[in-house]
Length: 209
Image (cartoon, rainbow, N blue to C red):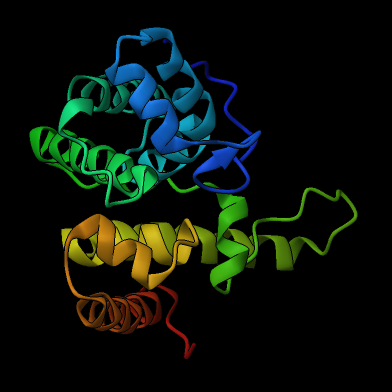
């Protein structure tokens, strides 16, 4: 069940591939068809790796944590509540595993988020075009670095909603299911996180955003 380091493509769609639902696969595994679990790994490994990578600074650590999350999911599969979506249950395991890793490490990473993911929340990665304006490239790089640092300074709860909602693109309803909190709580945390990020970025960049 090894996850490779080449986890670039995002899985498209949730809960069903080739007409086979997550629940159907889970039932097959629980009934003894152990090899069927590989289908769930193939289906979600990229997303889980991406989410975990947003918590830890080292991509190799992210792979190890993602692997551990799948092992935990497999061992707990009989306790999975089919009234919930499998992928939100899996996300919860992965996020908790990543959080446990950071707690043990007793430090907050500031360089883990993929540059190409920041465009969606207001920043662009440095241009790879050699003819690009050097000043603009430097400015964008500074902004990206500042945003990474700022996210790393958020509290655990606020960082979690930023990663899941603003970076990973999950809906507030999905985040609420993953965290087992009301949607209103997620909305509140997203708002607070963005306010704190704005303050931290202004402090780092010394400019109005």
